Image 1: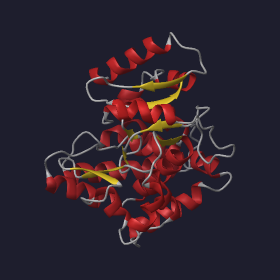
Image 2: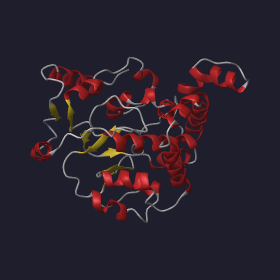
Image 3: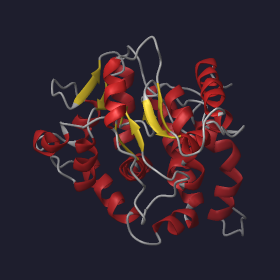
Length: 304
């Protein structure tokens, strides 16, 4: 089921965009939560084209200007305030019918942003089928889920792909004054700390009930992309995946490895159910793709 919250937002966005030309630079707001700072930052924003050479496919012409996002959840981007070209925003309204069925644990924010990317990026398509979502008000379940995630290769691959896509397609709304100091601030933190550990640094928006950090500056994205954090096995795995997926031809390699990626995701889903007690995750991959994965392992010729 498509959640009413995101259904209403997409419907309202679509109605507003109907009145605008493709090239209009648009700011979206929620009147009950926005303030004058959003408008001031929008007036100072400069439309920014996407880089000519990109590692990840994108349907957009220009970067979106956004507020904080949860880096541990691919495309969990603030949907209250953002800006971009009207033509690009229209693409957010083209929600594929299968999205809420295929990725039914997505948050409303992910439901808005993820469909533009996931079906063209095999790693993210596989991972988000076993997406457990955020855990609220249960520290034990959250800690168990986190330990499962950081020990599974598909999660490191997904974070790498999401970070590349964030760097290529988004920027912060406003001047981003924290960007210059972010790398130095996180030098002694592991990547796990950056994603989840409570922090008083202004660069993070720590969420007290879901134990997850929002990134308040793209300096943190740069730090992840450059490996400018303390060493850990998970951080090393993400850096290795970033290096792999930034290479020319890496997307074709992802597509060729589609079945093995879904096998990795199925294993992750099974562990999420068994160890973290979050039910209904394993079946998203294990059902539709079981025959294809088993067939590939047996040497069958299986169409993608």
